[in-house]
Image 1 (cartoon, rainbow over the protein chains, first blue to last red):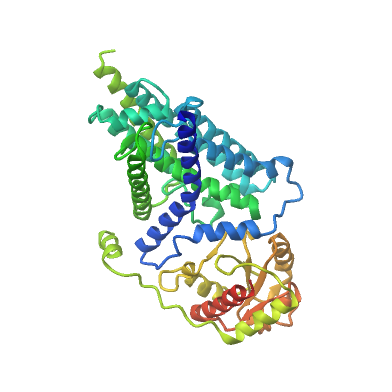
Image 2: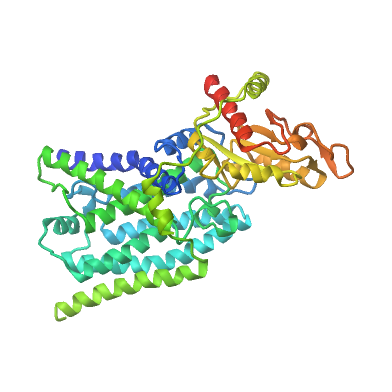
Length: 318
Length: 174
């Protein structure tokens, strides 16, 4: 019974992230359009785009290897696994015993590694540019992300995300400078990881300014659908991560009843939609950075992460 | 900057009301679909623009489709950066010999089901440059054309009503 309950909870959260992923992408696009005083596409447009891509022919370049065909499925499955490890509306996920916050970072890095390889596989110049830039951004964003993980791990005494989320939700933590610093670092890392402005522009048509888009220029049909859904899931993953670590308001605990779960679900959906709107507003008021200034932005994230860890050490008197 | 920011919250969008689908274009798309049946919902269309030798007059008008006033994205159509992602090729200009191979390869790189729309007088029936040592002529001499949107250049409203006719024909075809 206990196990059934846990698996049901986990299964629900697994399905939920995939179902709402295109919706969140749609919300971001709609809000961005309204910020430009455009009417904008329907919020459901990403679902229609996915259906169109799945019904289309899948072409392969003549010199595409097996890796090019396999990579989209690897990317979407790795991203989905990482997303199921993040608590959405309730903590106490059984899968979190298998993998902690460090593993989530590593799984995302695996997905990115295959995306970069696939970008280079066909041998077009833009794919190569995209891959090299993506790896540059990743190599700067990951250390910052690790420092955020360390801060959380020191505070909660574990790297297991589900437990960290329950500790944060319990309200015993209070307000700490370290949490504020790591929130700031986390926001920058999330922008960089999801290829958003100011690091990358998801709506660009100029190949020379692309990072994420440049790697997927050669993909068609269902392969492209896989890559798009993976990008949407990744956005939901980071928004869920921010909401469960820094705004755990209303989050249900493992042993809570259905009512608390329902409240948790509503609170989660509200939080994640609000974060998506904030992301869109933030993207509308910022300009894209030059590629070589991205390093400075991500160093700031890294610095804040380091400061957060140092402050914790100092305040605990070593 | 601050004024623009608050304007976005205080005012409604500046987008134009959707124009009527062009009946001539509708008939043309239905003829093309009868010749080569292809099934795809019109609710989501990715457009790749190919300049096959245009004077860039048509491109200026096509570019205007992306602005807040015409806002083509509200119909589920958006421009993409690669023919691999596209359903619709928007070809402008009298095809020059230099761009002929590029156009043929773009057409081959687009996954089926696909449509070709010729935009502007040069692409539709040929203009001043129709018979010329540097040009292969209108687009249908190189790739099969499903819809023509004439005009020199066609206004964004004409482009929209042509594309909406295509969308309507596709939706009734599914």
